[in-house]
Image (cartoon, rainbow, N blue to C red; front, side, top):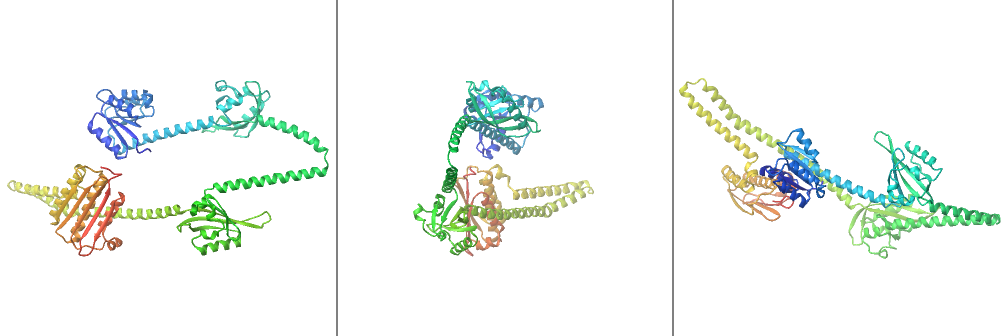
Length: 637
């Protein structure tokens, strides 16, 4: 799907317009907005969008009329229209909109994911239509530029299509051919041949046959017909198409050759048997020689133009020929730089090269993997096969070897293995984090909220047995427990994810977290920032918040300090974060190797998803500094 497809979103409700635009922009689509029908039509004519998400109820004209005008405009023939409404939701409205030409009709309310999926599906349909149209144009161009004639017949033998070459062959214009039985253009007596051929074609046969035709100018022509039957999905015969090859000149040549042969035969009769035998032997030798020369020429061209590196060497292993692909693979400029050298110099491992020569001597062939050594000393991985070439009597003549560079393939295979290992590790880490969060929430609910609920339940049960003058005190006590319960629920919710991160952005969320962190740990946070007035994409803000939160948690657990410094700077393409303390420090490589720090592991995993970078500077008793860079390009502000 084209991720840069252009979407025109039309809605007079500013909130719905913003929501729909944001959903589509989050998927990387280009979004243009309009709030009226007239503005929609004006913008559509100017930018020719791929898809228009059009609200049915608009202030100046309804979406049905807008859709009708768009579909009537030839310039917007490739634009797909999706009508959307939370008011016009009846079946009659949908039918009316679709009859006007709308490509989709969406009923509100609809989730953002479904809306995005519907728009993406429409973009895929449009892309498929464009590809189909291009394919059809290419196919039509190919058919019309062929050197062979093409016809298509229906099940009654009536011509439904011909290409330009067929018109040239029979001498009729296309309009005088289409719609007529193909038998009308045949020479007398050929109709029966065609009838039998059609009967064979109906049974699935595609055997070529020769037919004689009468051109419009009266000349007789000869053609080879190569038919192909057409069946529907139920196996019913629906006609055929055929390639028509004009062999008139060949027939005329054959007739001329036939006459010449008859004359030659009359002359040969007068010759002696000995001369006839000599001539036949000479003809056989000439034919064989031409065949051998042609085979050698074809093989030479194939070898020279092959994408595989090919070399020939004599039986002693000295190179006698290499193609261009061989020169490129081994880094040589010309054949002079490599010819007359030992082919074994191409191997990085000389012992393996000697083993190859031993296998060739023992069984005449060998194949396998190798490490190649280029002219500049660099190496590469290759797959090779070699065999001894012998003459017709089995006498060895030379060695032929073929090489394929598999360096990139091996790198890809190694990368795939590393990716699989990484994916497995991330999956295990995800399950571990999920279980940890569940244990935390369960413990908080049991220890904190459970106790308060138990106290509240006892207080409420006790109220019923109290005299009226004591009820107010117990009610006050119950209200205190309710307020305590609300506070604990709010704290648990904030620990899971502060709502202000989504509502207000990264900077307000961090300031709130620093105050709460200091109140809980008695560790002061010195905070410096720049360029933080703008909002970032949600995944960037979430990652930055969680990374800083995790880093501060590690400071509270291990550093033993009363103060920590946090710096965050937003540059044009990078969000730069630094968390530094003067605490007890640690050995980063040892900790990461043993995976003893779940916090650092979590930071690494978050950054890997954003192509970010983490640098840890720490030594025992020397403090710790974390430097984090999160790219904004590809995620954007």
